[in-house]
Image (cartoon, rainbow, N blue to C red; front, side, top):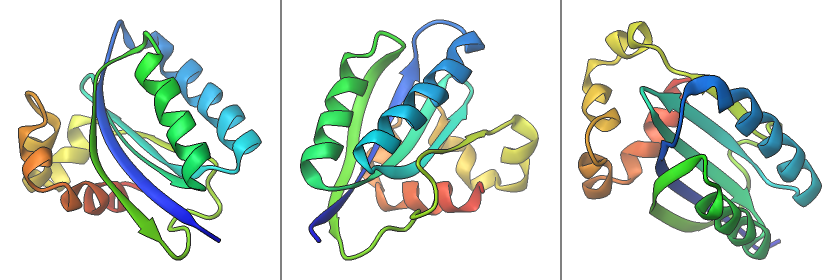
Length: 133
């Protein structure tokens, strides 16, 4: 099976009252299109990994880019994978709090400004995602 893994960042447009809606919409869409992954939210910023068949992942990413709840959507990386890293999560979600970041001080910079640090080191995005279960 041909699979890809896509990682992007974006900013929340609006307030946090839409977080549950974003998550439930992702679960429905991803279940219907056999997409797995994980979504982190911290201080107005999203970090997400999507995995599945290329056409479905690209379609989902296009929907995210068009979603008015997201702004500054930036692709960090896309790679071919032989198997899913998150096979049991149609969309895992974690609202990362400042206390959580205090446990991983090296990650704080990655949730600031314009995501410049993640653009320079995109593979760190997967490490961050995997540390926040």
